[in-house]
Image (tube, rainbow, N blue to C red; front, side, top):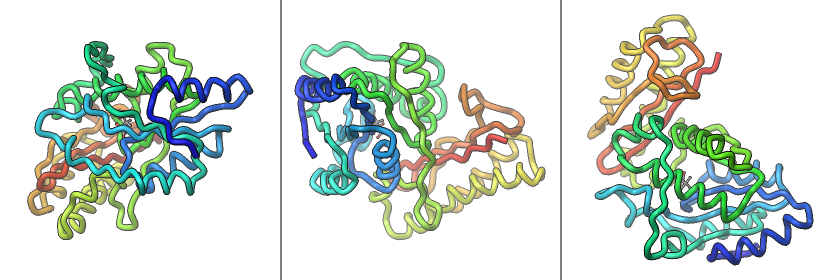
Length: 282
Ligand code: PAF
């Protein structure tokens, strides 16, 4: 496995392989790899000749007062995990190579970026869309892999890729959960013992809302949302940023919870912000 830190260098390395007819799969990450990332890497490994994992804590997607500085960076551990999964290249650029002095260009995906998490983290998705577009240009993968735990992010990247005619297949993969149901996230390590134990109530509340719809016990979106918020507020110290029921393609709010829909939540437990969602297609 190679570790490459500079865009020019990885471009040169990959262009040789592409000329030889190899396909390239990219798994963009901010490191602190967990089971969710490993599922993306494994799928990329199955579907491509060459697998690239980018490890870059992207400053442009963090707002003021957010956790950019304390975001976990266990690079040696990440490297070992990638080696075990037979990753071919780790791309870990220093921030100044991605955003050199004088950097001015950003991508924003209108409307979809201002709702849900975008409302609570202004500028976040502009940072995400920009860094992903840059990674697509640097790596020029055939396919790129994203987890559906970050549902809004996956949809925004899909939109950006289609709108800008980027020749990359955006592959989305299911959320991977801990045994008790908590969605895997690099931020779960911030949780204290009792916070960690209680955080399972988020996924339980979302799944029970979907079960209510499936059993035809509820369909009014506002009522379902209120019930989910009430369930989540049983977590000591929890503050709900939002719970919403949306169209899974456009992210527009739905007033009736009729499939297809996605129910999404963002919750702050102490200083930790967790997101989760459950999708009901039919
Ligand atoms: O999901 C993440 O880890 C990040 O938002 C991504 C897609 C790697 C962009 O920095």
